Image (cartoon, rainbow, N blue to C red; front, side):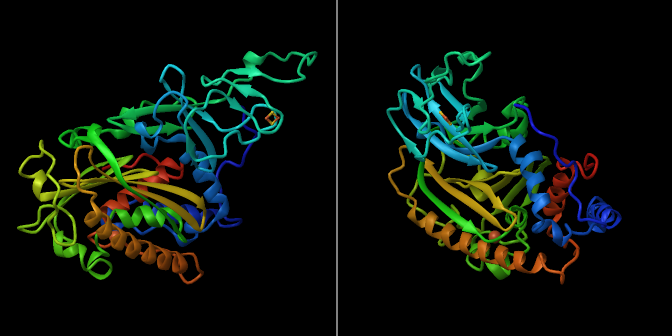
Length: 392
Ligand code: FES
Ligand SMILES: [Fe+2]
C-alpha cells in the first residue's frame, strides 16, 4: 500500500531542544534517569505517530485460533484503529485481511464474529471477494481502463499462531512472530498453552493513555497501597526480573508459603498444570509483550491482556482468562480476584492520567522498584525513533 507523505517526528512547536533533553533524561542508566515527560501522555500528534510507528508494525495477540472455528468462521478486530477481518477459508486455512473494500474503502464486515461466511460482499456496491481475498465480482466495471480484478484483492494482514494464541501484524513485511516472543517461548514451555480454553473475557475501557496502563503492569511499587489483597499472596518486593530484552520484559513474583495459586485465598479447586517445576509452582510469571499485550502465567490459569489504544486519553483492554480445556472448574475465584485487581489498577491509571497531562507535571524519577518501567520507557523511545538502541 502506498502512504502519503506524513510528518516525521511530532514535537510540540518551539520546544525541540526541551523535548530532546527530556528524552535524554529518560535514556540514561536507571538510577540516574527521569520518567517520561507528562505531555507524552496526552499529545494527539504523538499518539498518531505511536499508531504508525508501533501498533501498525507489531505482532498483536487478538485471542485464540479456535475462536475462528471451521471454514467460513470469522472475527473482526481493531488493531491500532484499523479494522482487521480474520477468516477461515474453505480449506480451513486462517487468513487475515484489512476489513476494507478496495473500491471506495467501505468497512466490509460489521459483526464481531460469526460462522458460515461463503464470500465477503461489500455492503455498498456489492464487490465480492472469496475467502482467500480475491476479488470475484465487481458490477459495472466493464470498459474501465486498466482494471483487472486480480489487482484488487483484499490487502492481506500477516497472521501467525503460537500454541493456540492468534496474532496479527499490519506490517506488510513483518519479522517472524518467534522474534517478537524471544525468550518468552522458553519460559512458557512448561505451561500447556495449546490446551487452553477461554474461561472469561472482560473488556474494560480506561480513561488513561495506553502507556500509563503498560507502565503500571510493569511494577509492583504501587501494590501495597493499591492492591492490599494481592500483596497477601505475592509480597510486592518478592521475585525477580528475568527477561528485559525488548519487546519482552518481566519476571516472576513469589507466592507466600501455603499459597498454590493467585486467588484471594491462595487456593483453588483446579488441578495445577502438570509439567511445572517446584519453582514454577511457587511463582506467578508476568511479561509485557510490548506494546500490545501482557501475559500472566499462574499455576492453574493463564491471563492475556490486549491493550487497544483508542486515543491519547483512552485505552480499551481485553482481559482473557484461560484454564486447561479439561478443567471443569470455571475459575470464577480467579476472575473475581482479577476483576478487583484490574479495577484498582484502572482507577489509579486514570488518576495518573489526570495529573500527568496537566501543566502541573513535567518529569519525575524512578524508584528502586521501577527498573522494568524504566527499561520499557527507554525501549519505547527507541521504537519511536527518539533515541538509539537501549543498552543493558
Ligand atoms: S465501496 Fe465496496 S463496493 Fe463500493
Ligand atoms: Fe496493579
